[in-house]
Image (cartoon, rainbow, N blue to C red; front, side, top):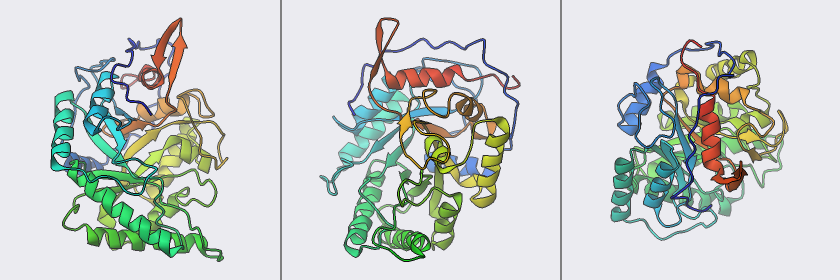
Length: 358
């Protein structure tokens, strides 16, 4: 992924043909709000008026973010997302395809924090390396993964970021009939070790378990999987959840209609608890519901279409949560002009926003 410090900026307009949003499922969860404020040290936002925004409104709306490359430095990623009109940033702490990396320095952490403050970018989020697999039964990979996640936690702490999102993993090497349950137990046990080893270096970091598509033998595609990991851990307060719209659709949870959308989040609340939900990944899906295939698509260009995103970003109970794009990178030509896909996807999301009561 290339850093896009000078992405073209689109003047987004509020479309007149947006259907009414039914005001569904608007419960407020004070626990989650307090958790977010505690984690981020950010006062509750009453309106959206950041100076770098390409779309300003006088009512509350979600914090939109994007996964950004760290080529050129973590601070440069902040400048890139601000230039593109985003409110928050997700990034890797190091090269995601390598086990080890040069240690981060305090100076790099300070530079990153200064960039966040100068650009008014909030809710920075680290995504761990895809190499890590805490569910594996292969002892060498398991130990390597634990050590790598400890490193991820410590790098996250140096950057001054309060949370890290991760995929639970796959029970590779376990051919037993109980491979799924065994894998979930190994994940919880691994986190107990990780939290113990980082109780001085990264004691405040919250781990966000990400919902997955369930491709192959990957765990985390059932809400019950994430609830089980949290229940098994000796440190349940160290966990939150990040919902990926592509992943839960591929896993079989529908967001297609208001009724199905509400049913899905009622199920999430019953099994995990909405107080655990701290972030979203906004991605359309190349494949349809229940496909168990993890392939992201641009907003409105996949199997989800626009309606699930319209429902989600206008749901007042999630108005204070960060929502990060993880859509494919690249450029697109529109009306003879070239634009960055991240900016186009952001414009699409903002065009779906509606004033409360509409």
